[in-house]
Length: 173
Ligand code: 5GP
Image (cartoon, rainbow, N blue to C red):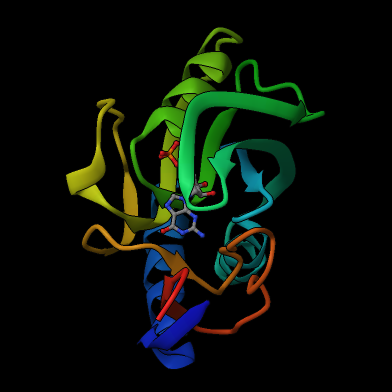
């Protein structure tokens, strides 16, 4: 297993998080913001992001997965749902990476059924060329090519999530 050099350094990540949080703070002024992070991958991005947002907000999480090692199963499983009611609230769904779009689309439709006042999506990374499902992304940190990445919450087989930077990953040399 090979973890490459950082694609995004700690400094680049911090700068991008501040940029996203500034936009979100402006857009949600005076609203009832409920930020829902998708675990486990988004845990690091989520904590950095909410700390940098300057409007009042509520935090919740949903535990969902569609990936097994480096392949998507195409089927989303929700292991633990959010506890906050989303009805009538301004919901921001926070994801680590949008790949095929299956996970975000599934969770988006699930939330929309409960009639939030608004629903937007923030993803730290986006692999546009891998998209199979059209899902609207409102805030995107970085666009990346079709490569598997780890670090900053992103895993391979539940490892490497603790790397403070984002790096490319290969199963063998
Ligand atoms: P999607 O449903 O959009 O295909 O996949 C989204 C999920 O797949 C992400 O939340 C993440 O868990 C996983 N994923 C997709 N691409 C990568 C990647 O390059 N690295 C890692 N570690 N996970 C990925």
